[in-house]
Length: 124
Image (cartoon, rainbow, N blue to C red):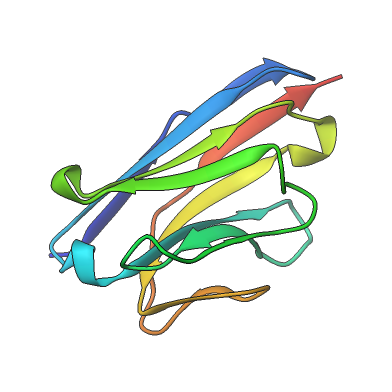
């Protein structure tokens, strides 16, 4: 059974930092692209960042470039999203996703597996 579980969300003041983690099991993690998307109520889910299977290619949405860093630890089947200098408009539910490809603007595509999300709230 495939499981994708996020953790690390919470409430933070503007300018603060959070690190999200995501553990994926039941799949060939090292051979897959991984990433993060976010969604606010009433809006579509948007790709935030992703990284391909060999760690050579990454994508960042323009709004988070320079503030967020995505990384992966294949030995632990874990994905991280380090979020610095957080802003109120970063408030959203953040979803971890594992799939075949990491593509600019689209994020992770190809038989994706999604976590249930973790809430990030940035207070002004």
